[in-house]
Image (cartoon, rainbow, N blue to C red; front, side):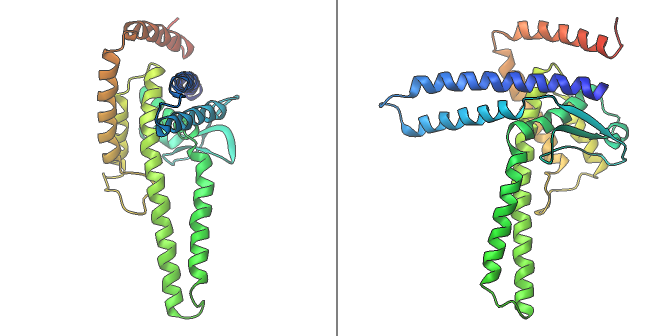
Length: 261
């Protein structure tokens, strides 16, 4: 129940954010669509409009949160199981996650969905494999040279995909932090979450073939994103109303999980 209630708060925040971004982008595009405006500016807003239209589409429907009985420390979404978020017992129990830390994780996973990372995985893999096949077809398929070339091309493909995946992780961390904030969770928990993950992984540095950045790098960026976000909030004229709304949300949340009547 805890995972589901937190997850639904994040999804609602994600839908609201995507819808607002779409309205804002359409408004900006309407203002710049005239012959005197740089075509690059128009193209930028058209790209942003498409991005948020797709995000709204991806976030539609009824989402299910599946808690898996496993000691693995993991959570994920998959294109093979649409509208499902999987969270492993090992993540909840071994890291002793607070509600705010769990919100950061679900926000991260829903950001992968909103940003289209899940949909991008398949074509990226196909491009890498296709490139490998073309390069290998240029080499005599017999002999040690071909064997070494095959290994080198395969390793290069792994590095390309890993680098692409690490960039996705950073993007999902940043948007996930924003979604957690909009859902009234404490975004400073992003740093404590990656501190816990870093201790579990013994703070290893990122390697070329790692699909995820190191927890040390992610913690540093999360602290930076949280600081910038809070500064932007302070100059927002609607921030006081947002804090009052969050107080009401927190009260409703505690009632939902039985902490308050």
